[in-house]
Image 1 (cartoon, rainbow, N blue to C red):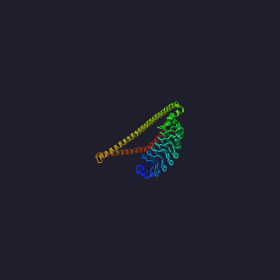
Image 2: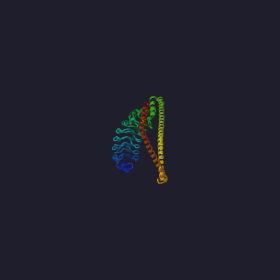
Image 3: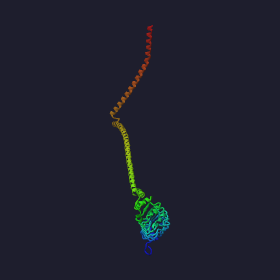
Image 4: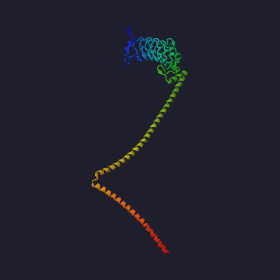
Length: 367
């Protein structure tokens, strides 16, 4: 407060403000955003220490002049709407400024922005621009980087604003200019602006869709008949496009079904092979189990009877006797066969001698 009781941006006020640790650092140089809106300030002052400030909110005050911002060279967004500013000034050092909102002030002319070479958005709704004709708007031509312009609810009456202002802005893509007197003077206002500004993407209350541009350009070149033809052609193209999408979607579904069917078939084949393998392994395991159980039962039977019992000793001895007898029989048969073979070998020379004697006797008798 000053002597008259009006609020001011004093250093004491800023020091108290920075004690709010939820929003600020206590050191001014560390803050990149500052809220000074709706406080009733009439002057911008004592902000020299906030050299790293990026965003400054000053709307809803009683500020009449833009000043005290020379040291804020890194400022990018400045909000000064709902004040009492009548002239754009004091922005020469803000070369990095991207957005400035001056809505609801008393500005009559766009000026003082030529040094803001990075400015992207300029909002000037509800001012007094246009009282002096299109000269009040020629300041925007000094900002080739400007992409968004809001000049709604002003006093612009000259319909040549399209050719003399809008068409000379190389990057203009968003435009708000409704509720100006010139809008009623331009026939089919929206179609005309869309057709004459090919880079425009948003006009007033809604975006510009591709079909809007197609119809507007057709109307601008050939009137209503050309617009009807363009609408019919667009409708046909959209139907063909939708049909192509539908066919492609059905093909995708069928392809997916085939893939799923093949996957199920392959899975069933794998499952059957795995089942056969498991059955074979179970059978082998069962056979092995039966063999093991048989051996185990025999061993348990032998162990349960014990080697000292009479029956077991008898059965054991009888089997031994049978085995020994069979072995003796085998050895006797072998010896007999050997004796017979030797006897046959001894009898062979005797047989030969008898044969010779018989032959000689017969020969003597013949003589």
